Length: 219
Image (cartoon, rainbow, N blue to C red; front, side, top):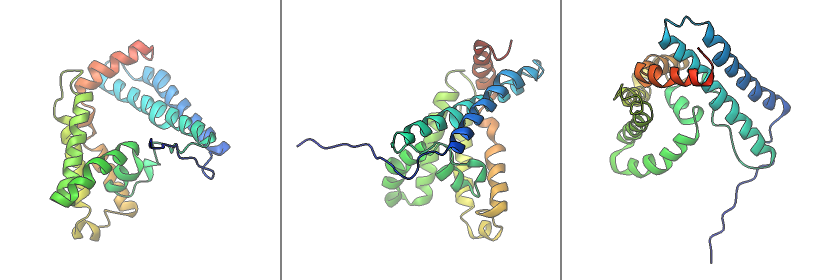
């Protein structure tokens, strides 16, 4: 007998008019940033221009268009939750990477890497392995095309793993780094502080800026 595969259907999570509007608004804001704000940044600062453009692209794609697609699928009754789950509300590094940023990727790595590894090497080593793998994947996507910045993305994700392990220690819990506003500030510092390792100058200058020119976002 052939196995039966079915697409999960939802009845209670259909998007509201407000959610449709919010998803569309994020897309529009991204368009404004990419095609209008980026033009206002002095061209003598191409790295800054590229970063502004990336913010616009991320809003258009990850936060805007993908959210609109989620709304469309859920309107049809298909279980397609948004990829982004309010990352700005993260109260810990674990919360950010595990539940709020690009939720499809952690779902896959947790199922196919973390769960098989944890009984063999323990949770700490399994977390390091998952983030090391994520770093290698991002290095292939971000560092190989511009032929530069190798190791930066991997270092970024290793920092995330170490921060995640640190916030679980007794000392970090006493400091309130795993919850509340302190946890939110710590998370922002861990994510934004080493962000230049992830989106390093070779990627921004050789890939993002030329792509923006191709799109007509900058001259």
